[in-house]
Length: 242
Length: 123
Image 1 (cartoon, rainbow over the protein chains, first blue to last red):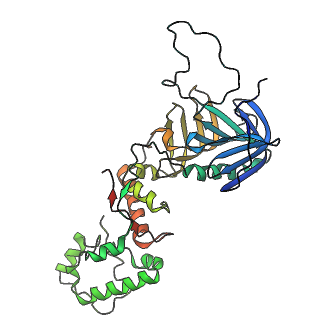
Image 2 (image 1 turned 60 degrees about the vertical axis):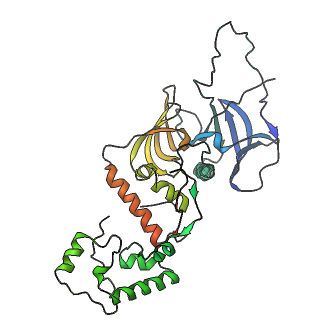
Image 3 (image 1 turned 45 degrees about the vertical axis):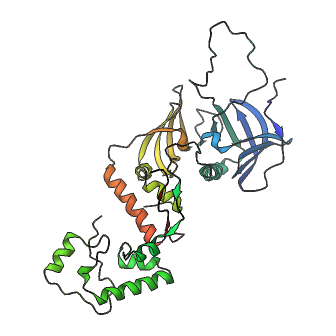
């Protein structure tokens, strides 16, 4: 009696296992489930006792996880996982309820919570276990999030191509930093743009972020613009006013 | 200033106040959780889904029991409030994050960052 009814036999996950930690004790609400292996996989978190039975947790049900080294709170360093679900032993409450009495565990008031602790014999693995869980958790964003504006219309498009088509010039950044990030394609684009600049009076251009109050004043002062091949660092001291 | 390597996450961040939370990296703050527990610690990371990663955490559970956690990851769904520390200039933080995103977008991050979506569906 008292066996954990939610323990099942299943094969260990084979795909997307970000971290695997053998010799790890699993504890639920203070009761040990035995020693086994923790599998932190992209699809779910699984723990299998050495005998072959275990359980899995789906990431959307996991509220939080943490590394606990506070021995005052719990005597062994462990990975703490809080789950938004109920995991109970077979014994259910059988006491009849009085008429008119409401259930204590009304889900409207109190969310079900289950606290798991995974205690690896190798404490130094806790960081890796924690990080692997963070990565896997991030793969499962909340589908019920009403605020999330994650739906975007239309096809993904190439920003630069889009802006060039409309006659705009892409946003500007300092010469050296931009140059260091350029691909061959970007380099060709840069050369083309510099050519365009060399051919016209620069005040005709509205380069995003460069046409500031300061730069306008400079041109109105009659400052000559060097229209010969563009010199490196020409725009270094332009003030970008966002 | 670190921004996400994901085009989608950058776009989400740019269009929501999560961008402010992302600017809190390095600051100590308190996160109130949905179940009324609280966690105070240094922000390591906040992603576009408002998953919050904290270090050196003082955790007070819903019963009031206090414990320390080396690292804590709370899913966005379970975050109720993130306190903005007094020393944080909100406007400046948002602007810095936007600039970081724009730098990546126009001059490339890991994926060259030039792909975007025209607009959000339900705006």
